[in-house]
Image (cartoon, rainbow, N blue to C red; front, side, top):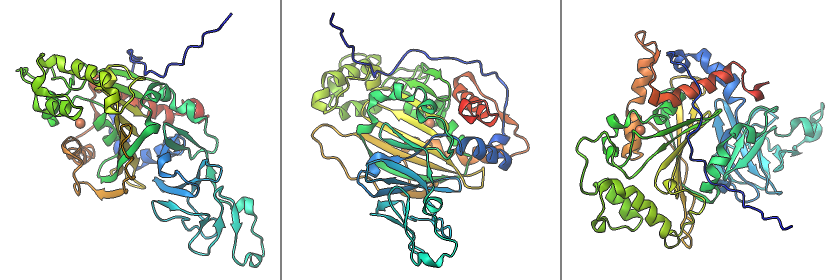
Length: 433
Ligand SMILES: [Fe+2]
């Protein structure tokens, strides 16, 4: 009898996810301000979690490398001759110099600039000038670059500082099943910026994991997003919310009868003429879904793995501990929050934009990485609005008068993140064992 094989679906599950009981207690502010808690986070989170290192597209050729920092550590990510991406501590075992100082480049071998100790692309120490002068010898295995566990998913290279880390797939959990449909591996990075913010890394994470603030600091978005009918799903480590786009928020008292300019702009961007739209404003979102589905070939995209809502909405994922993905059908905005080396009141906010390049269009050059201080550049209206309060939140959290975070139901992704965080701190996740 013939067996019919059904193609394994990569469609993103859209159904409502779990709602674990998370309590209603105040979240202690010390988690945002205390150097002792920051150290606990290093010991239990940063040195134990699977973290984003770079994009595969940043190291396409043999010998390509990038450096990335987490806390006091610098990591060197290198494409080997076997095309495997390996991640090493970026430190020469001679006198402790960093092997690479720059953000990236290409090298046939990895040579320390101080005394020219040379490692091959697998990290093996292969050449030591005046080697015979080391009377104690130069044992190559002991003095090779220290490699750490690494893995790839969705065009991203991940690493884990813990030599005994469990599999990356276990840590990512639902993430591939939920996000493979977007084919991030085919997207191209178009912006790569780091901003030094005067707040704790979690202050920044929290700013994007609730839509409660939209009505306050993003009034323009009320004419493009439904910030009320937002589905929130809380998984084991990670969480998400699904935000309907190109529709007017129910919070707007006088619902517009004409296409709002902010939506008209989005319609034009995909080739629709807002002047020709004869339906009612609440029907625009579905009309845009239909238009994109019917015209995908002409637009140069393949939406066959995405459901209709995904063609317009923001499927917004928080990948614990420090990635936020605003995911759309043909673009994605990624935030990575990294702690400061020593100060719980500071952090690094990485913004990386990705675009699906339409079929037949040239693939743009990768952007240069830019690191700036808060306020030195604009990230656009919405992200600038998001950033305004954060240093003031951090100041306020340090006040004697403030006790902790008083969290509403619609902000429960923040509470969920704290549950995961405290499970790690208390050693309650399987691969902490
Ligand atoms: Fe916001």
